[in-house]
Amino acid sequence: METDEFWNIIETARSNTREGHAFDEALVDLLTSRSEQDILEYEERFDELHDAVGRWDVWAAAYLIGGGCSDDSFTDFRAGLIALGRQWYERAAGAPDSLAEHPTVIAAAADGDHVLFYERVNYAAAYAFKRMTGDEEDFYEAWDRHCAAQPGPERDSVDMGEDFDFDDPEEMRRRLPRLAALYLTPGAA
Image (cartoon, rainbow, N blue to C red; front, side):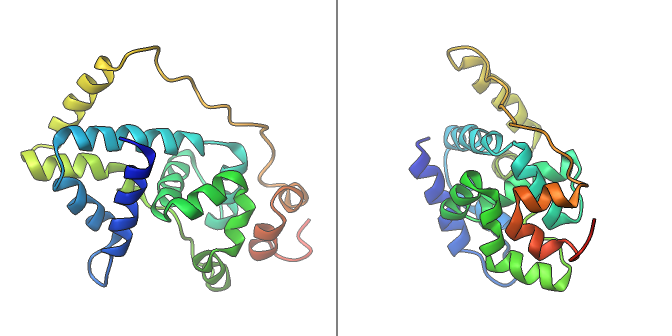
């Protein structure tokens, strides 16, 4: 699946979101209307984009926005970045501190809420397969076959960049000044 087609699916799901019909449900609806091969190709592109933001600077943004962030939560945060759509995903991938400009992040900081952690988006392809076949395991079996059939070496691990101390307020202010201004208590040492 080409990148533009992937983002078209995400944007269409975003536009189909309404009261009582969350983004993840709209996404599963769209995927269910496609072929099993399309769902596998969607998952392949999702994984590539998800892995591409598996970096320390993005994790630091998640840490500030979430008031802490475990490795499982970071997985959910990256899915949440994808759910924001292409424009915000690319902005956050290029400069995680730009999330300080997102209206949802600004509102959440003022209210003390934690946003952008979207676990169910990680499993949209599996849920679509389950809806189509009646068994979620069918997805994982098909996914294993799909991956085994792909030419070339296995995917390399992503360079996460420079690790740093998320609990050091000065370091966080230096690296993510706008998010730190939203989420860190002024004068915190």
